[in-house]
Image (tube, rainbow, N blue to C red):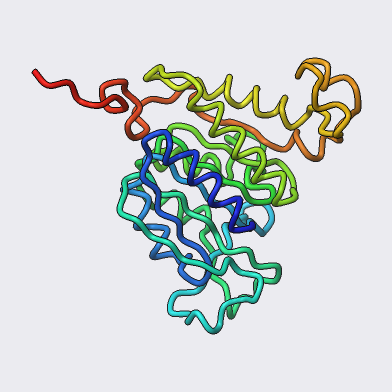
Length: 251
């Protein structure tokens, strides 16, 4: 994902009282990911998922890789700032060999404790679940929910990283559109999907949003893969109360 997209999402979160930590490139390892599980109110992972059925996993960098050995298409910067709500960006690697990459598997996810109220899994098919007769659905989504996440956003098929970035930006804007302490994730999700569906041709930009949904069809590939699991409302993500967002009044 382009650095500008990361910066835009980081800016949206910062404006709404969340202090962010951005990790990318060769710094995105098992150790770095595990450190964020117990500290993050919101955890955003933008990268690759791979494998089939119960072998589905997040693709991470191998521990101990030097910056000089990173893939040339990996994110070029590593930025870390003190905060409680990390924004974690997985490196963008097109080819992940076993020697160079590391997996974060279903077993790994079940074995950790996740503090985050919301986990965003913006990887190809991160929401694919295995359903077998007489058993519950099993996949990365259920693993993160079982580990403690309140809500998980995921995708149902391979998607373009630009679509994932655009959806995420719209979702965060809608997520914090209200000053209410309780965040309506379902409404934010629906509004974001509708914005992704709306025609973006230059000549249609002045139309009402409802009209733009009808004028030129946008292929479902771009807007339909996203899915929200777990709770449809969320509370307690960083400084969301009015008292925290407003300056203190002397007594």
